[in-house]
Amino acid sequence: MLDFDPSADIQALRSTFADIQAVVDVDALRAEIARLSEEAGVPDLWDDPAKAQKVTSALSHRQSELKRVTDIERRLDDVEVLVELANEMDDEDSAEEARHEIAELQDVVSQLEVQTLLDGEYDERSAVVTIRSGAGGDDATDFAEMLLRMYLRWAERHKYPVKIMDTSYAEGAGIKSATFEIDAPYAYGTLSVEAGTHRLARISPFGSADKRQTSFAAVEVIPVMEEAQEVEVPESDIRVDVFRSSGPGGQSVNTTDSAVRITHLPTGLVVSMQNEKSQIQNRAAAMRVLQTRLLLLKREEEAATKKELAGVITASWGDQMRSYFLYGQQLVKDLRTGYEVGNPASVFDGDLDGLISAGIRWRKRKDDD
Image (cartoon, rainbow, N blue to C red; front, side, top):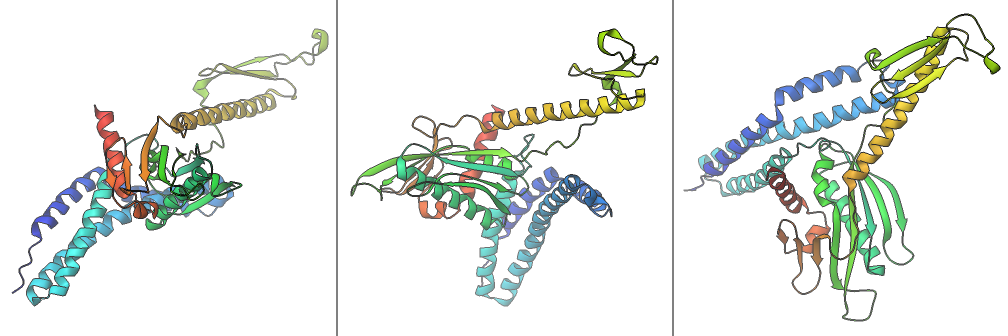
């Protein structure tokens, strides 16, 4: 008779999954999807392409997040039925199928559990990743291309949409740099732990025989920021002064207070307008100029935020965060977490989840200290 009792494993999965559901707040997620679906269904939505893109992207992300949670719930129910069937029918094939499914669920639930640790301001956004070759000549540019393929394969494994934005090819092997966007929920929070200097040690295929070569590449990860298209200016944030327009030499242009000066109180920006014939026209023109200046200011702040998030990465000795050894011991080791993988080929083929999860947990512990 078949002796198959994985109830302890299933119970552990259900316990962890219950904690995840509490953090995700499935009811709130469904309400957000309903709200975004209503917005996406408005007939004139695409009259404003920027707003439409924002709404549809947010809806897609929320739907993907909900699907991950509901799929796990369904699979947990199904595997319990499969275990019961295997025992009733004394069917080893069904038992083996259940073991495989439980192992997969343990991986999926672990990944989702890690995602609940991503609570930074920009963590839930999509990501823009830039890879740059560093010190090491042809080996470095070849290594940069290996990293590009690694991240693209990782995204492919997770079925995340990818858009290559720019590639600069080297004169010899590989690439000087490449930039791509991964449009998926929590892509930035997940991949932000990959930012830093990566080091490759191997027998160089470009130099003399049996010569070990060390090369470097830098990985930069920034969130996709919502581009500011317009700036709302509350009346409470401005002071409006009116005065009479005047021409050269102090000559009066008119005898009414048609000129307008608007002061934006939070920033101190001042805009004056007197070219139009009426106060209403001058105020509208001044507000347009003020909104434009505030928009430029906001974009400058966003650019500064991106630069701060990206950090300074030198792609050389002294600040590497991960080493890839392709000779002798054949090992990938993260120098921050101590996490190791003894199969570099699988890592370069996109099997990064273990390294990424270890990095996220390490960062969370570091932030909590």
